[in-house]
Structure formats: C-alpha cells, structure tokens
Length: 151
Length: 39
Image 1 (cartoon, each protein chain N blue to C red):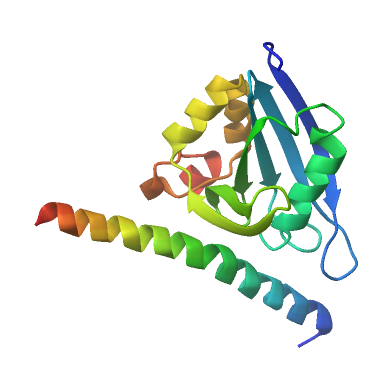
Image 2: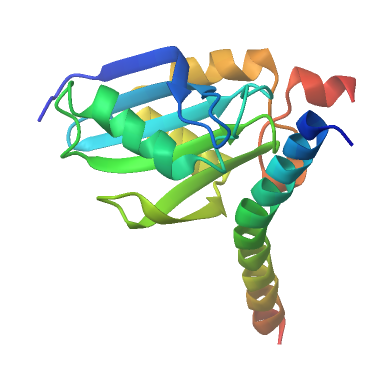
C-alpha cells in the first residue's frame, strides 16, 4: 500500500451509454494508505446516459481502466458522485462491490466529504471545484457556490 | 415529441427514479428519527 498521496484523474472519462453514444464525466481518484476515494463529477452535460443511470458501467470502467492499472483495485474504495445535473453530492454503495451491482445512493454531508478528502490529500482540488460553482442545496449542508449566490 | 427529446425525458425520469427513491428514503428515515427523538 502507498504511504504517499496518489491522485489520478481523467478530465473526460468516457463510458458506455444506453443508446450507443458514450457518456462522459470527470474522474478523480485520491488514494493514501489503504483508502481510495473515487469522485465522479459530471458537468451538467454528460453527452449521453447520465452517470447515475450508468453507474454500474462507469464503476466497472473506472476499475478496468484506472484502478487496476494503478494497483488501486484492492484498496478500500469509496465512490462519490458530485453531480451538477442533480445538484447533489452523494455516496454510492454497491450491494455487490465486485461486480458493481445494485447501487444505492445517500446524501453525503459536506463535512464527511471534506474529511474523506483530507484523509486522502484531495482537499485542494475540492476548493478548486467549488470555484467552478456546482452544488446549490444549502439546506443539505453543502457550501454555497457562485451559482448559488447568483440564483 | 422527437426521438431526441423523448430520450432526454426518459433519461431524466430514470435518473430521478433511481437516485431520487434512495435519497427520499434516506430523508424519510431522518425525519422519522427526528420525530422519535422529539417524543
């Protein structure tokens, strides 16, 4: 296991869509110790099937193309979906984490998210993402963004 | 409605159903816990 922080990202990660056209999202993987946090970010334009609808395929592709080649597939994995489409931040869990079947979503409180990212050394990226403006639901405890203040 | 428009709508309905149901269930559970805690 790596003691140093690892950050792997792909700005435009393509995954299979339902209608033959691939969807895309940004993938960031932060790993440290034995933990890897995978953050899937859509930008309100996934080009095809959304990350939510294709989450099983997205996770399988991330594992095949990024986690396995970088030796991170045996880490404890936490999947996070930062969605501009849905305006929510969620943690995704799979009933069958090996085959990524039966996903479930739950709201991820902001404190829990930043604490996770601090643990794996990804907090600077989160600050940059906030600058882009993204999540707007103040009542769920997510930080205000430029989108929010302009609304 | 064009095929493209229909696909967009279908995609949104499925998305809201999949994630929305899970999130609603979580919110309902929290509300129940609050109510129980208030008794």
